[in-house]
Length: 203
Image 1 (cartoon, one colour):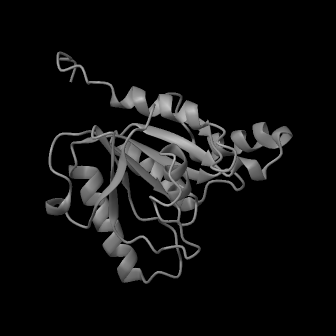
Image 2: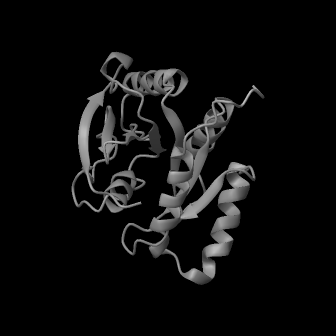
């Protein structure tokens, strides 16, 4: 996809603050400090549109980015950061649960995991949670530039087996440093953004 326009639109904590309109949304979820902001900036060819931070747990809202005036990226707070208070984690969990359950605009969730390590218990819970809601998932393993290519297959097997990845869910290797996987990820996103068949009466 050729990105001609990208801008931060709004930060939201409740449905009344979500962008109005019918533009489709691609949400991004992952552990704190897994590289979601770097992934967004890489995809959009921007350096600091999505702010990166060395302090995990800093993002406390759902941040919406409007792309080409056609669709949104919705970056939800990172999960699994132990230093955040329990009350704060509960509040984030409620906010994200409301978004994922009620937002009809969501076409897919890009779940980001760190390729260097086996998916955590939080990663596993998020994957199963999204599956329970029947939300399409694009799994993206980041920071692959930190792992030698000869070890990629070993790490891929660990990711697939740990998450019990289902065949219909794509797994894309990605590096914001080398831009490996950027085109493949855009193709996956574009496929999710294609107009849905309103004549499908199978449901």
